Length: 349
View 1 (cartoon, helix red, strand yellow):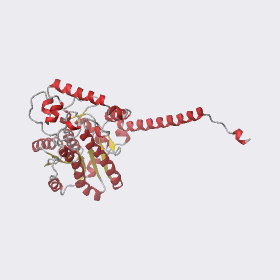
View 2 (tube, one colour):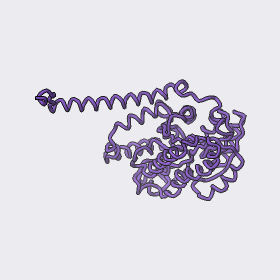
View 3 (cartoon, helix red, strand yellow):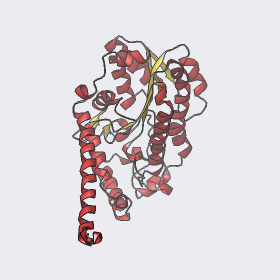
View 4 (cartoon, helix red, strand yellow):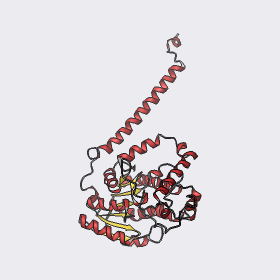
């Protein structure tokens, strides 16, 4: 008798309830995304940084790959925000020129250290150069893109060891040096520059994508270890930024100038252990996550990308100086005369 009083649920009723739950979860996730974007739209009202935030962390900031691109922009912006700056990079002339500009424009002290991060022998000299400085901010920006053209793994230049040293070892060694003095003071900020290409397995940039994926994982794990000690460790994964590494792409809705990107991203240092640096890149990352990974990994898309890049660069007649190996010239079809190799670039994308 009691059983007859219980409502009988049909298969359609179960499906309706299941779809209702799934719809609710999707709406909840969308709401969370909207709230996340609101933080980027209104950073100064959502979580405004006090004017003295950066100087309160320490007197000095250290920036690697500081001679050009994002590293140069970080050095300028941190000096504007009240920090003295240690600039570390490979090319002494660039460092001297940028250091003089920063001192003249901001009145802050600038110290330079020449170091080639493709070599593992530089860290003892760097550590000596940093002795006695109260370092509150470290920007692990130095990085290299060993194949400026997209290409398959076997066609890429044979400089994988240099790429690992510059993109991976540099971040771990510099973090180890600086973190030792941040921990006793219970404060500090470490920004590790990754790339949007490091947030998913990116064919045709295999080594670069893998090296930047390491930076993402390394940063998040390190933040979990040191969050309770008052140290902020954040990975910044930009997409398009106009720098020498990206052949000075024309700035636009997605592609930012280095100065624009850095100024905006520094407002978001308390927004979590991973950011894409600006609102435009946050939206782009959200859209790309909606695309199944098999689309990016399809042979048809890879062939289309290869054709697009080679055609574009050949039309501009600027592809030959970017070619740094016989393998890559072969990949391009062997056209054009071999010209002087372009120097390695030391900034992140």
